[in-house]
Structure formats: C-alpha cells, structure tokens
Length: 262
Image 1 (tube, rainbow, N blue to C red):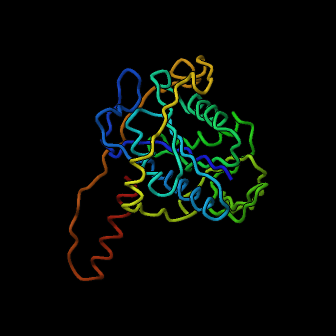
Image 2 (cartoon, one colour; image 1 turned 180 degrees about the vertical axis):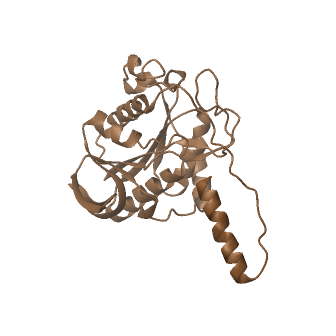
Image 3 (cartoon, rainbow, N blue to C red; image 1 turned 30 degrees about the vertical axis):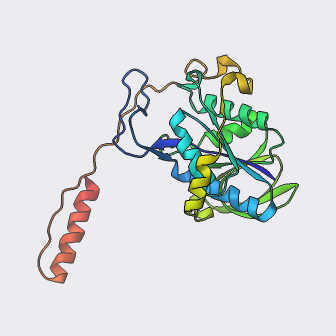
C-alpha cells in the first residue's frame, strides 16, 4: 500500500500578525509547528503501513522551514518526504493549494491512499482534503474516526457526522481526512529523530510537477481574503466568591447567568 500524507506547518502562537496588504498571516519570524490534526494523519498512515505493508510518503507545500515538520513526520515512521516550495506557490488559497498537492501526488504515482488531517488550525477551512479528491477525481471520506479494515483493493472506514456515523467502503485510490479520535500519535524516539536528520528531502518546483502556472499562487486562486483579524482577547477577570457553600453556589449561578447574557 502506497500512502501519501499531506501535512502543513502552522504558526505555534496565537500572536501571529496579519499582513495589511495580503490579509494573510505573516509566517516569517514566527515559531512554527506541525499542524496538530496532521499528527493523527501521519500516525494512521504509519499504522496502516505497519499492519499491511507498503510505504508512507509525507508531502507539504510551504517555505523551506517546513522541512522541520517533514522531518518530524519521518521521525515517527514515515519513509520519506517531499517539500513543494517556490515563490510562485505563495498566496495560494485552498483550491490552488490542493491543486498543487494533487499534481505532486500524480507525479509520485501509483498512490493508493491519501490521508489528511481534518483541518489546519491556522485556517480552519477543512477544504484541502476534499479538494484534493476533487482534483484527482478519487472517492473520499471526511471526518474518519476509525479505520475498520483494509486490503489491496480498498479501505473500510467509520465516518462521523451530525447524527452518528457511517461505515464506508472505499475502493483505491481514495482520499480520507481524519479526526483526532482515530488514534494517539506516538512520541518520536531519539533514534527516529537522528535518522530523520540524515534523510534527504527533495524540493519540488512548479516545473517538477507540471502545474498550470495560471492555477497557482494569488493570481490562480479563485477566492480572496477580504479581511482578517486576530480573535478578541478572552475576559480573564477573576472574581472571588466567599461565604458558606450554599451562598457560594448561589453567587456562582448568578454570576454565570449574568455572563451568559453578556
């Protein structure tokens, strides 16, 4: 089974600044981490490889510093990684990003399964996984909470939705997006970290994957960010409640009611 896991490096802080011109997050100079939801996707890919055999390839589109997130994925069991990095990719929205990732998956070739995290914490759109499936014209299942079974022909998954869950049988090739309920990501070992530093990670440019230049970057993105702002700070004012347990309970209920109205 050849598995591709798509990951993203995201800002590690809620103090990220917004570029006033592009209305996008300024990533330069900020601490970055592997998108938390993608850690579950990597873990599930590694588990499937350990159970059924095959290879796990991690890909990401981003700046050179995204190499650290790719090496983190290798340190927990991925076999190799590919970085898609070029100025021409800059400013891509989810549709353009998913197009680039889909072209990279086509270049890798003979891929059975693509796994993505549910969403990225910096955008929260949950669009890239489904859009990859649309570009590739592959079957897909989103919000997967458990892999029930798999073989050389396909995969059976438990997919969560508002009213419960579905059991879906997908023939390969397929795309799934996973929830954090699906597993508990392993902690990389020292041996794994050291090994990840020795693996060469190729950097693919637009010409390497044969993209249409009119479909990438800001000009190739059908959507535009009109306005972006950081969330308002939380109200951290503390109020001390004193008295008997009964009086404290009454005051607490009254305070919660007031705050719920506000």
